[in-house]
Image 1 (cartoon, helix red, strand yellow):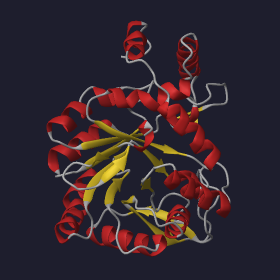
Image 2 (spheres, helix red, strand yellow; image 1 turned 30 degrees about the vertical axis):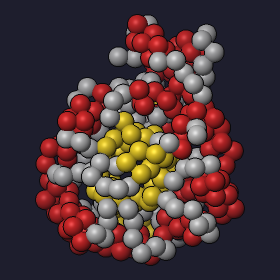
Image 3 (cartoon, one colour; image 1 turned 90 degrees about the vertical axis):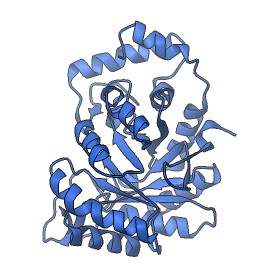
Length: 320
């Protein structure tokens, strides 16, 4: 069995997810368009290769990702674990800003709503778009600027749904550590998804978030391992955290690539596997827009990298 399909149980649940999960932002046309066939083929391929964890959100393509993922999952009979996010609802709009998404429906825009009614509406509409009767995990999404409301209004709704058995797990999906840490302190979470903060370029999550999650028995899933692109291809046009990469970040990524190449390790393999050498990290979540990309990621995720490499990176001052 390849590492990518090994199973690990989400804390406080019976949900066993693959160590490599598929994030479906690209199915919403993130940065470039994805065809319906590419979407269907990607999900079918993932299931066939033993990946059983799929994450989506209303924000991804303004509902498009959920629709495409739900349709593709329905075509297959293999079991899966499904997470979607709450915190935004899709409202009618005359000329919505598409942002980073290409494949968006006309006349809809995402609006933050962390109220109790907003959370209920978000989940109800996600179920319709996904074409399912329930989801497994609900993640509070990008709530960094709405923390008080997220904790006092959004979380109690999800906690009630969990008690009723309508969802099996509660978590957060964010890019900032401090707010994720606050959630762990103040809410009873099963899992946190932290994006971009445990990578070859950024190890902030290792300082306080991971030790706390271990102590409180909260599972950790790491996303954004390529920091939105630069660690997949460190070039002058690369993006870092969804913006043009600063020169110093490009220079560091190139140093990392050269260091790893000298040891016959690709930077993408190292980026994919780096989070897993930290205690408490359950899985890595990656986005792919077609089965060819996913196949490459699976191969690089499964390549054996000596544990000594991580120590060598530290000794060279390339990671902390």
